[in-house]
Length: 183
Image 1 (tube, rainbow, N blue to C red):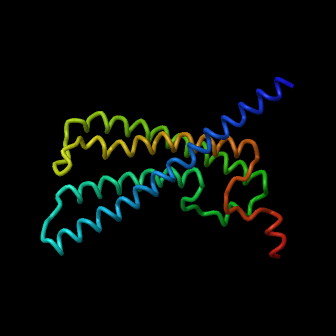
Image 2: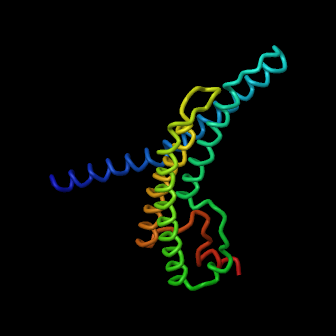
């Protein structure tokens, strides 16, 4: 009985950790979008109503936008939401479809590792430059790419694991039963 309780607790901890790894980037992205709207609205109001230009608001908006784009890219990797040509793959037999999906996941994992490695190279060299309006290192801008790289590695590895286990390979997958029902 003790082993069952320990295994159950371990599974719950992994599920909770995975939930945080999935939801935290989505929550951070949503918060950044809200802040971006507030900063841009504040900049427009201050410029046109009070004739005061906020130098830092443009750079802060640019910084937030970069973080939103790259974290959103990583989120898209986990949800398999990026553009793909699936028409031909959906015509293939189930086994071949699975093999192509695994190959795609391996390619994405390799790309993610390379992407992360190159982002670290870029971040290392960016500490000497400054964003003049915010007076912070430009490394904060490039750090978004490194964080996205880590998330992409985690998410593409999870997608590969799901594909190897035969779990649902696409959130929008039609599936053989649905194809038969439409014919």
